[in-house]
Image 1 (spheres, rainbow over the protein chains, first blue to last red):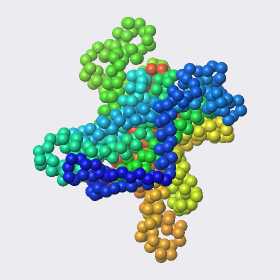
Image 2: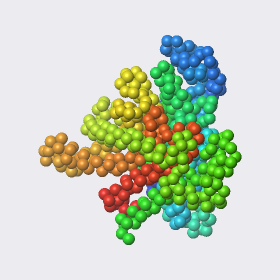
Image 3: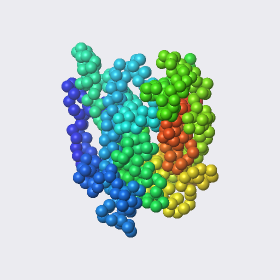
Image 4: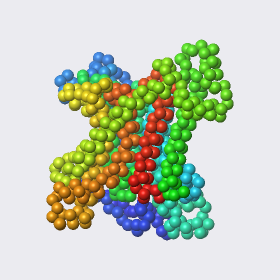
Length: 307
Length: 308
């Protein structure tokens, strides 16, 4: 077990500050005791991130040039496996270790970029809705609710089908899928912040709206947004993996865990490792992300439970 | 208007807005690729055929006119004709809706029964090895992607043990694996929820009173605790219904289950756009209808929601 401590509040240019998501709590020093499973999740994610970044140096083979002479080779610990292809090869002779390492790239990069897009859209919408209330609030919340009660995944399948599969389309769709959650969380936080003394004082001093939003409200949303990113990341990584599984995500032959799992689906009887190895990588990733997300949420803001 | 009427109106408004947004998105996306005729006809279609279809679809008209026309056709159930099957797209989609519904409802039943039983058992045997292992497995399952769970189930129950068929449909045996796959994630979250809800109720005063007056533990649990613990669980069950439908759409591809999700994926692969469009519209309608029914039943059951 290890501990890290973080100084709670961050100065926001006004006398009354608190970067705690719950505004009524006084500023305090919070000490985080990291439970073992969360520490393990951080380690797993760090390793996967490293695998993605350093894939060109770590991978024993080129991930997109098949070795036709070595197809359906099992991992090295099974009969017939060789150390030349430590985790075996697939039905066209791609090296599975190399592809799994490279597969960390789309999973993490698309997940994080989509979370950034969703965060940006949702935070701006939530800030405006919560600060100005009235019509804009109604419009933003109606839109968010409407999207949340639509079968977004099916719509995404259709949109990719019509626009053609590309990383840009995937990223945009994933980003859009995440904005309502950000908008709702940010809005409710802003609604409770805007009546507080430091905001009212700033308004009384004649500060402009953009200044209040930027200088007083945004810094107080920092932790909330970080927690939301961690919570949303799991869904976004799965979004990429699932569309790639359907053959609508990362265009071939670039490796993605989703498309690797899909190609292994037909060979479960003869070569189970083709689907299982990238599947394990994907499960490890999303389980780690969601354990960290749950923990951060519980530590920083229990009121977010269930979002 | 009373609070019930107002709340009902706002739910109806949201449902209508959702449908409108989705229809408009479909319209915009279909038009944004340039000429939908190019999407609708094979690439080597003769020019006269292109011109004829363009006129037939009204594509020579201005966009607002096209938009109104698109709506009028959608409302009258005319969603175009499948390029691949040469049949009305709406008919095709409705045919495939039943297998998806079967899968969704089977998964719902499995998840509800399995999740609640497990949750209650864990709460009653709290902090034992059984409870710890079940809850750890549940939180692992809850985070896992359903299509990977499906693949692992095929590998163990079908390839290794040979108990169940790995794909296809037609018999009850074919339904087991896909339904289990869809159900497992919901089952895990229901088990955790039921456990914590029951534990919370078991700490209350009235349960202590029931015990103090000498009621057997079985009666305390069944008569006093379970009934009160069921409120939050029922709420989540309703919310999960729509999520299970999406889950079914996802899992169909893994098991080659002939439902609406697989139809969509197949149609996208062969660029059968009228079918893709019809799938989106029908799934949206079903989805919105389920959400609306769940919302309205809360309005009836729980007056507190009316003021939110």
